[in-house]
Length: 134
Image (tube, rainbow, N blue to C red; front, side):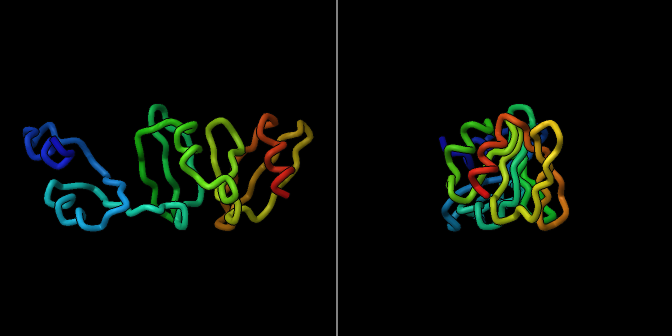
């Protein structure tokens, strides 16, 4: 049974909030027929600014929009281009070209400031990755 069939067979009161993430645009109409919140086409990495852990999910930050996706940070990290994305904390991955400034702290950690003004903490554990990126 496809994801669409599962959603169509659920009682209306049990249909979860769904965002489809796929490389195929041909299913977009089907997605909205089953009341999907959104339909995202891969690759996401062009619009993606940063990613944060959210329990059993990750939150994808793309401009002013946020999308929740089921998965772990480790899994998501394996799906990203390591030349474009840097893990700066156990719960944060950043697209490198979004970084506008690194502020060094006394405890060997960094504040990573993005082009849009967002400030993220980089832990000591991941500071070597940032130094190599520089």
